[in-house]
Every structure is written in C-alpha cells, then in structure tokens.
Image 1 (cartoon, rainbow, N blue to C red):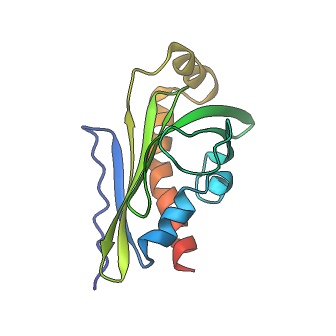
Image 2 (image 1 turned 45 degrees about the vertical axis):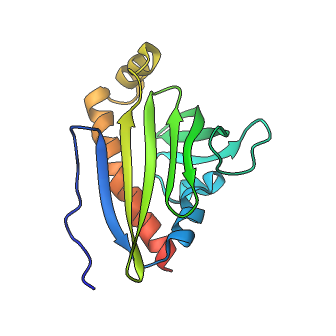
Length: 162
C-alpha cells in the first residue's frame, strides 16, 4: 500500500498533521503516552512525570511536562482528557490553553496517526507575555509549534518502525 504524502494542516480548528506509520496502533499508543520519554519525540518537550499518584494515561490523570527552547526552560501542568488505548490520547496544558491530541487509525499493516493542537481556552496573559519576551513572539512560536508537530511525527515514525 502506498504511503500518503499529503500532510494536512487545518488552520481553521488548530494545527493537524497526519502520517502513515508502518507499525500497529498499540505500539504507537505506548510511545505517545510515555510522557517520561516524550523528549525523544518532541523538539520542545523534554519529558514529564505523572502527578498525584497517576501512573499512566487515564482521563483525569495529571502530569508535569518539562520544556526547553535555547536557554529557556519551563514546565507545564497537563490534564489527560482522552485516553482510549490504541485509539486516542489527548491532554490540555494549563499554562498555554492548548489541547494536544493523537488519533490512531488502523490502516492495513500500519496506522494513520494524526497529531493536533487546538486551543481549549484563550491563551493566558502570562503565556502571551512570555511568548513575546522570551520565545520570539506569538506568531513565531505558533509556526514553531506547527513545525514541531511534523518533527514529532517524523521522530515517532522512525521510533515505531525501528
């Protein structure tokens, strides 16, 4: 089966990219929900740890994410809002107002993986100020986030197919 080459960006509802990965959904789900090792996928997130007794992806579980860009370092508090094994994983980031989601769809001997980012609430003023002062401005950082989705999926593909 030929691999799709049309990565989609949907700016009307946020950012979204879909890629086909030659691996089963359960392998991919295990990788994207391993928040402690998210740094192996994401260009900005360096990892995380589950909070308040959570040990894995369950709706309502919280985790702390750690991030870096150049010399900047910061952490986020995240809430899992969707966790259907081998199908969907999504979390909301308190500090930015962003929802990150992964949807996995079986596709023959592989999986179509869609990573999306959308806003579930307005960006907090403190986040807007930090973007302006430390991360090159909102528009620049938004483009980095869009580019980061593609980079994350490329790394996920390489890891899942290895």
